[in-house]
Image (tube, rainbow, N blue to C red; front, side, top):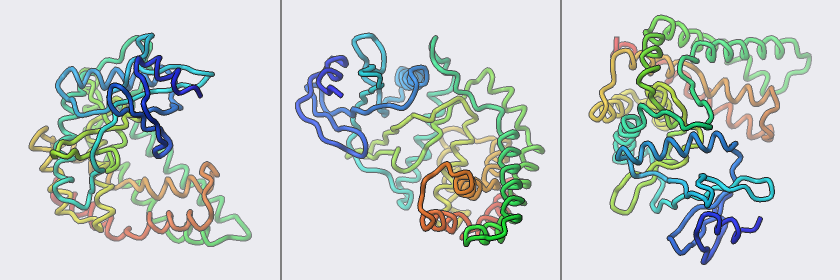
Length: 330
């Protein structure tokens, strides 16, 4: 990799460089930038770039825009590899333990959804649209768990992970079916139909390390790699679940987060039901068991067991949470 040559394609000159979490911090004549090799295909980068620019032009400025190459693209190709450069956002990672950070994160998420709605990807960009896919996704993952259960039951020699899985799987399959039932009895299809015209977007990885707090308290959002067209309540449910795991599923904190978002972009009753459905679905349990039995992730047995225990240790709190949440919103 010829870093100087790559930088020149982005019309900047590098003064210094240092590795930073799998990327490079580049000190340039135009300020600090991030340089990294991207695994995304060009058409996906065009989608992400188009979304960022759409939001920026509509007034959402606190994000990590791509630099543009001498070919007018948000990437360059060097020796068969794709490289991107982005603005470096100075600040600290947010903390979901901190109530100020949580509130600011939810209000900023609402602004992100407002400014991203209506985005039409440019010609040549990938089609990244998850609207309307929840039912099939739920059923696929439920089927995964059922197939894994039958396979494990038939094993003559079961290891510790197998025994733990068989002890917990029925509870989580019931939760998955409950989530599916909630979804089927919601107005999900109506919202998806409306979304064809509204074109809502989601960040799809809205977590603490992608929310940066600047020195003056400004909130910046970075890493739009998984962004796509999707109902905005997906992001809301996902970030609430991430926070809930840190607070033993404290319903009061969840309601505070919803109110913070609602002050900027009102949440409808229909969306609350979909947030409930997402909260009921045992995504973490499915993910760790799927990774273990499919061999997709090369973790040690010790790490898998640790991740598994983290996924199941709060199951009673999780059940209590969704019961309370249902009582509040219905």
